[in-house]
Image (cartoon, rainbow, N blue to C red; front, side, top):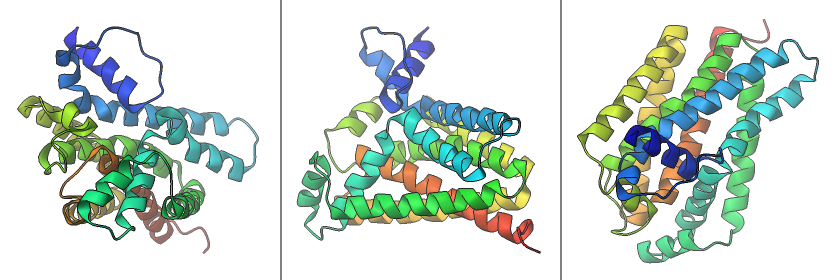
Amino acid sequence: MKIIRSIAVSFSLYSRIPMPSFKWEEEDMKHAISFLPLIGAFIGALIYFSTLAYSVVTIPGIAYVFVLAVIPLIVTGGFHMDGFMDVQDAKNSYQPKERKLEIMKDPHIGAFAVISFAVCGLLWISALLIIYDNRFANLVIYGISFTFVRAACGLTSLKFPKAKKEGMLTMETGNSNNLDVAILTAFLVISGGMILYLDLIAGVSIALVLLLFTVYYHHMCIKNFGGVTGDTAGFYVVAGELVMALTLAIVSLLTFPIYN
C-alpha cells in the first residue's frame, strides 16, 4: 500500500496523469523520486501504441512526427521543459551563482529560454523525422529512452550535491536511502538492457552519450549553481532526451541510411 501511495505521489508530482486524491504524508514522499522512471514508461507505452495506430491509419508522416514530439509535453504538462527553460535563462545570464538561482525562481521567461525552446524543438523534430523514416525498432528504442533518462536523472538528483538546503528537489530526496538508489538502478539497467537487446550499436551509443552528458551536467551545475536543483533536474531530463534522440537518429542514418 505504501508503494502504491508513493507511485501515486510520483505521478502527481512529475506528470499530468490524474491520480486518486489523498492526504500526502511524509512517508509517501520518501520514495516518490524512485518511481520517476514509471512516467517515462508511460510515455514510452503511448509512443508504442500510437505507432501501432499509425500503421493502420492514413495520416501524413509529418503529422505523426509532431504527435510523437508532443506526447512527452502532454503527459508531463511541460514540467521538465519549464526547468530546462529556467536553466537556460539562468546560466546564460552570466550573473553570480546566487543571482542565477534567483533567475531560475522567477516565473517570467527571458530571451534565452525562448531561443533554447525553439532550437530544442527543431532539433527534436529533425531527429524524429530520421528515426521515423527508418525501422520500427528505432521508435521502440526512442520510447524506452524516456524511462532510461529518468532513471539516470533520479540517480543524479540523489547523488550530486544540492545547490540549496531548501527547495523542491531537497524535499523530494531528503529522506531517500539506498533502497531508492537500488530501485532507480534497476530501472536504468532494465531499460538499458532492453535497448541493447533491440540494437547493440544504438544501445552502446545512447549509453555512452548520456554518460558524457551526465559528466557535462555535473560540471555545469557545480559551476553555475553550486549543485543541482529541481530546475536542473528538468533540464537533465529534456536535454538528455534530446541528445539520446539525436544519437539514435545518427545511428539510424549510419546503420539504415534513408538514401542509398
